[in-house]
Amino acid sequence: MLWYPYAQMKTIEPPIKIVSAQGVHLYTEDGHDLIDSISSWWSVIHGYNNSRINNVIKEQLDKFAHVMLGGISHEPVRKLSDKLASWLPGDLNYCFFSDSGSVAVEVALKMALQFNTNRGSDRSVILALRHAYHGDTFKAMEVGDDDDYHFAFAGCGGKKRGVIHIPTETAALENAFDVYGEQLSCFIVEPLLQGAGGMRMYDISFLERARRLCDQNDVLLIFDEVATGFGRTGNRFVADLVLPDILVLGKALTGGYIGHAVTVANQRVWDGFYSDNPAHALMHGPTFMGNALACRAALESIKLFEEGNYIEKIKQIEQITRRELRGFSSDKIEEIRIMGGCVCMEVKDAKYLEGYRRWAYERGVFSRPFLKYLYAMVPYIIEEWELVKVLDVMKSWFSRGK
Ligand SMILES: *Cc1c(COP(=O)(O)O)cnc(C)c1O
Image 1 (cartoon, rainbow, N blue to C red):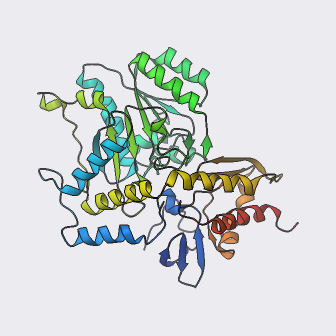
Image 2: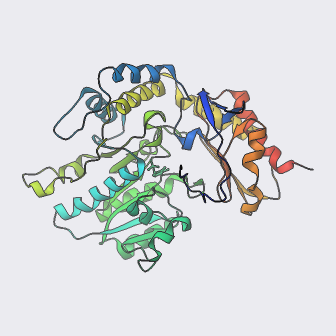
Image 3: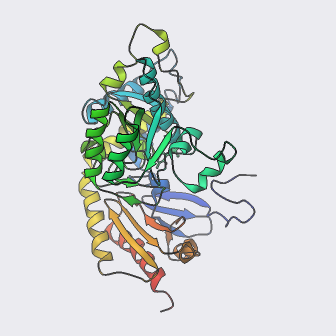
């Protein structure tokens, strides 16, 4: 029996069975053609069945699929780390691979904590954002701030020790540094766009202020760009605008082909581990880190991103979205938010979205709203008519029966 994610198995709606996929389309066992409006959890940026990514994976498969990185190295992983080092902004040059975003976040937090112990500092408090989501492993949940995930800590006194959550407001940020500045090891954020916490968007000035406060207080700034990386906010990376000390990438890293993630450190963090003392080494090593198939897929995905003028494509997606939603409103909707390749309709009550998945399915769109959030994060290769259709289905839900 298969156990599905985030689901009560007793009352789960039967999942939609997919038999093939092409471009932005999912084809179901019962003959439906669905536009995937959420890119398989925001990862499939080039759409499905991309011939170029398919080909590099096939080519690599005939050499070898995987070798461990403990004591062994291979060209695809070295090429990918070189590519990331030159492609990413500033001195974000040191790539530690892992198999999922959650683990890459764990690695980032571990780096920040050990960076301090290596230099004999006892800074151990982590600053994070209200409504944050950083993954489902324990430390990632702890820096996250989502009621759904808190039950896991109920047995441990219900309180997260050593993590402070603040709203994305400058006054709260300044206050947190005033009170905890000396104890903080790092400040971790999903920059500009908080995804699983409800597609919440905030201003770059908050991050600029955070950068300055981190510098003044000797605190590492971590950007979790697992969701925002590779163009989702309309920027290639938010790190292009404000430079973090540690950057975490996942989801779209492999174009959504194979689970893989990377934690990228800057020179200063790297230097904090680089020493003659063996105890200063980073003691982490996921079995499948640097998987050769994943690295080849990632390299090709980055090529597609660069050659395909994706930032322009994402701008178009944002423009079309704004155009289609101009003047649209409903008394059930609290707020409509748009940023780059993300649109979210937050409703006033979660019950207003009950039945939406089915409604969309019957109209040729795959969607998976959660809580009060109906959103779309489409593959960047989507055609205008397909995007308009996704938005029309969203709008029609609120005007049905009128
Ligand atoms: C999805 C997500 C993660 C977790 O990634 P997994 O690959 O699912 O472990 C972490 N951080 C953010 C911001 C995410 O959106």
